[in-house]
Length: 108
Ligand SMILES: [Zn+2]
Image 1: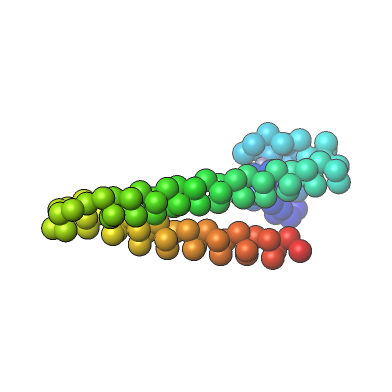
Image 2: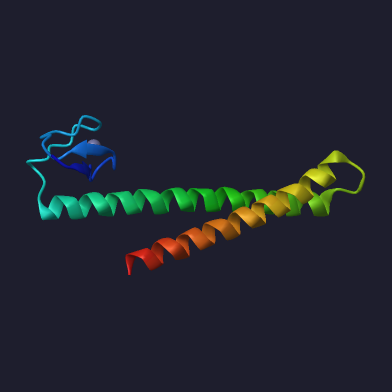
C-alpha cells in the first residue's frame, strides 16, 4: 500500500482506494487525458486567482493615487491612508507579477 496524491484535490490518499474520500474522484476512471485536463483546470484556477489579486492590487493603487492627488488637507487621515494604499497596492502588484512569472517558468 502506498500513499499517493489525489490529482483533483491534491490530498494524500491510499492507492488502494478506488474513490477519493475527499472529493469523490473515481480513480478507475482516470485516463491520461483526464489527468491532463485536471492539471490544466488547476493551473487555470491558480492563474485566475492571481489575476483577481492583481486587479484588486491595481485598484487599491489607483484609488490611493486618486485620493493622494485630490486631498488638499495634508494632515487628513485620508492622506495617510492613500499613501498606505499606494505602497500596499504597489507591493501586492509586484508580488503577483513574480507569481505569474514563477508559474509560467514551472510550466515550460
Ligand atoms: Zn480528491
